Amino acid sequence: MEIRRLTFEHAARCAELEELLFPGENPWTRDIFVVEFAQPNHLYLGVFDDDELLAYGGIAQLGPREDPEFEIHTIGVDPAQQRRGLGRLLMDQLMRLADGLDGEVFLEVRTDNEAAIAMYRSFGFEVIGERKGYYQPSGADAYTMKRPAGSDRRGV
Image 1 (cartoon, rainbow, N blue to C red):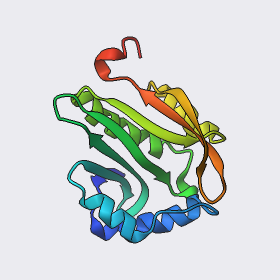
Image 2: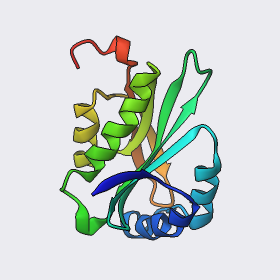
Image 3: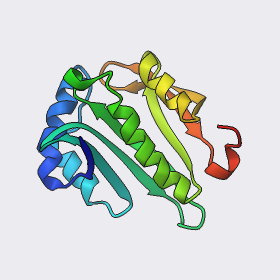
Image 4: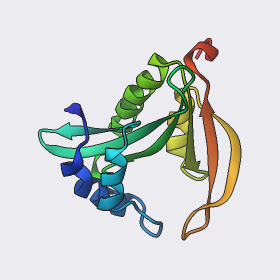
């Protein structure tokens, strides 16, 4: 397995995985992924087995380079490949980027997604708020989580 940067050619597979992962919500389409991949301040990575995309994740850098903050936009793992550490592999790479620029990181996660919340906590994220009805059309709630900048995470 290897981690590679995602390109436009991977957008359709990402959208296919979104459909599997987020039924009953508003999964991202191929066109949304194409737009996301084109943004200069976004980085999308994928875990590949040969040429098959098994998992994807994206982060955006916001604010000035000398005082950045980051936002995780999405993490998704093919349901047939879950519980193999692929999400953790992606998070590790995305957090290295944020740590390299000493930026804090934010994300939203469903309040009932205990596995994801546990993984995010293991990377130093803490719940800082709750967004009622964040996910549509289901109306599911989300936690907003924050990971302090590397220099602020002593002991994590």
